[in-house]
Amino acid sequence: MLVSGLDDCPYHLREVCRISLEFLDFVETFEVKHNTKYKLRIKVGFHSGAVASGILGSSAPRFCIFGDTVNMANRMANLSEPGRVQMTESVAQTVKAKYPGFIVEERGFVNLKGKGPVFTCWLTGCIGSRATPRGTA
View 1: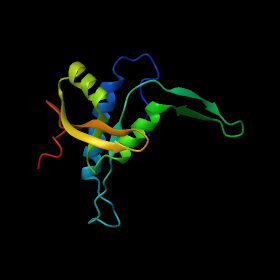
View 2 (view 1 turned 120 degrees about the vertical axis):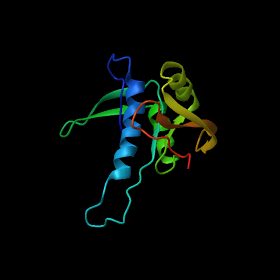
View 3 (view 1 turned 60 degrees about the vertical axis):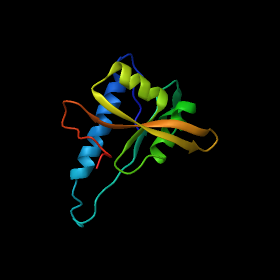
View 4 (view 1 turned 90 degrees about the horizontal axis):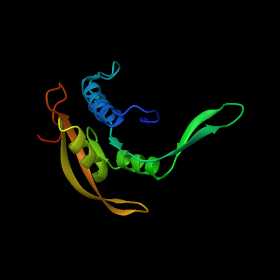
């Protein structure tokens, strides 16, 4: 899991979009040395919002984050599809408004445990970058 925006940088959403597409590009070209026929596949999903955070543990302290935003991001990743980036509608609206170079497509409603149907979107590429549109074949 990746966390971004815990500092005052105003561009965390742009960077999450960018790195999500770069992860997929990397995985597409990655060769498993001992089994070259095997293709690595990952699912990516994200959400944005408020979180609670803190350091837990005394013998092995760890920085942890909690909250509905974390749970929603986890669900977006779990319910995504291999080779795709899924995000919530609210995040997609922000991406389209602030960063029109990213290509966002509607996925539709997905059922989330404990939440019911939630409208989601795909991040499929970026205009003017080496990231290629996904799910268009």
